[in-house]
Amino acid sequence: MNATPLRRQLLRTGLALGAALALPAARACEFTTGTLRVTHPWTRASDGDTAVLCMKFDEVVEADRLVLVETPIATRAEMAGELALPHVDFLIPAGQTVHLEEAGTYVRLLGLRFPLELGRSYPLRLGFEKAGVFKANLTVDYGRFR
Image 1 (spheres, rainbow, N blue to C red):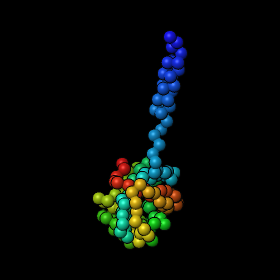
Image 2 (image 1 turned 45 degrees about the horizontal axis):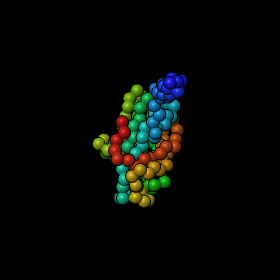
Image 3 (image 1 turned 135 degrees about the vertical axis):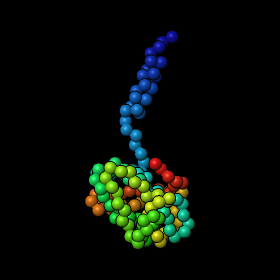
Image 4 (image 1 turned 45 degrees about the vertical axis):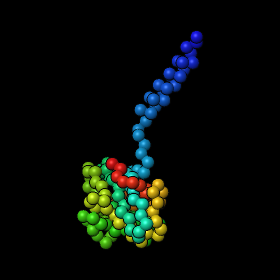
């Protein structure tokens, strides 16, 4: 019996496993502005005219503020929850991880143009006072992603 095919298969498996462990884990729905990372902007399915927008900010090397949220699925956005404001203004302190989440402060999307269906994603623009404006995806999901 020739052991060469078995050795090759073991070598391939070992190399594949090594490559998977060596590469950093890539997460869908995250982007870095250069001064902070935004992870998983999401909302729940909705057939009403409002939706709750949640996301996580971490790896914050310089304090910044979220000052703009735009998406073609809604006419406007405002702060809601613990920090209710008629506009978007959310402090992101340096060196901390902060969340926009249903149980605390979040962004409310108003004037939804159509029902939001589970599993869909929509364009989203997030504007920061210092880092500028960035494109992201808003995912319609079941719940939190930490």
